[in-house]
Image 1: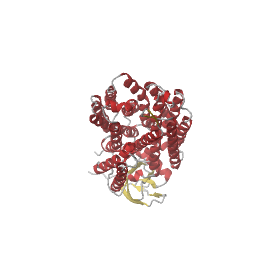
Image 2: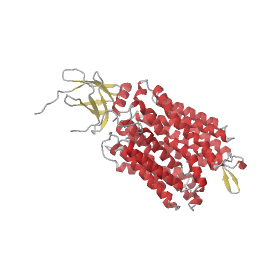
Image 3: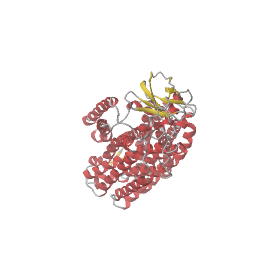
Image 4: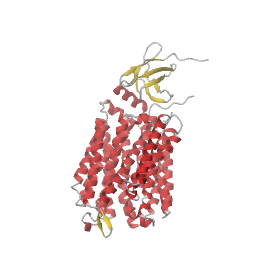
Length: 579
């Protein structure tokens, strides 16, 4: 008996699946946020030079950037729940390493392992798409996408409290405990997805992407230490451009690439990923600026003189508001579509940064800024996976969302580098110590507002969709998504599935194969036998159809990419009965 991928979600996903996956995402965010309260003290705590201590943060950034698309692809190939558990387990090991050492190199090694957990976000989104019914998918993906901000906002005051009143290594013991709990809950309550991509893992592609990302992010994160015009910074940036270009050429020639660049180049996917970079920039600016503004002594004339814990509590509404916008996003997206929700979120973020320029004189004002920005970032973050899921087949969900998460990480990396440079160049020097100024804080907010403006332009350039798109973006199967996308865009193949007598065949499975024999899409015929399939690119294809009680059929067809639908009726032969 042959096994087939289910046309619809398995139905095994019970009520706890969404909160468990969201909890896993929050645990990853907690891991990322742990060191924020003690960043300025790392050189003393690790007995190292300030430039060396920053590698504790840089190592997590680099490993997370590399692991995110790789874990997404491994999840598509070998099981998303399996790889989610693996990523969390590696994080737990890394947390335990960090919990029992004050040696710089061991701490860097532990933080590098912890960064692998960044792959949990796209894996969780992929699991949701594969298993949840359409009425639950929108709000579930919104909550999963926002979990990074939610966990960061909630963890900041808790981490500050621990760091202020206990040994800072306790932070990592807590992270390890949360990781073990997330693993246990996932194993017990989350079923494995039945959806699998075909092909082998692209090891050369993974190595090439890893090298390119490391070469790119190293000068971004260390440029302020090395000098932005230094030979090291410029050399690494140039090498990154060359390696990533060669990697892209190689990926276009591989039958089963790590990242399908043809899919990534689709207008909707490309613009969404570029907008994600801008949203990542805007999210991290507030996370960097407000804690410093709040904790800087009032005597400097530029700070509010609050304790580490109070500063964390003032910024916590950023994450809380992101969490509460998830159900609001689901309603807005169902009515107006994720493009509109993304635009609305960017407008709210812009209003938050614009208003925040005049709200830096009291702690309560920073709370207002946090709430407004949290609402906007929550809406924007929640829109991104729906836009990606609506534009790629189910077998590429993990890799595509992994790439989108990577784009956000690149945005936060750029934000950290730019804001660090701005605050350093605008600082006052008092007693040999550089003190950030209000001018630097406001200039950072202006940079974030500019990033939001770029993101808004990109969002407005996304293709506008008609009302059926609202249904498509909540669809929980590749077949439904492809069907509605093709019917709306009219770029692909369509027609009717008929039996030998010419009568329509309902619920026939129609699969689109590209010239390499890879599945490029799938759908099921409607009650009147009609079907529609979008094509990822012009070229030759094979339409394979089958239905119970009928023989299989394979029909060759070519699409020229002229934007019209090519009509191909599929007449199934009678079922052959063998003795």
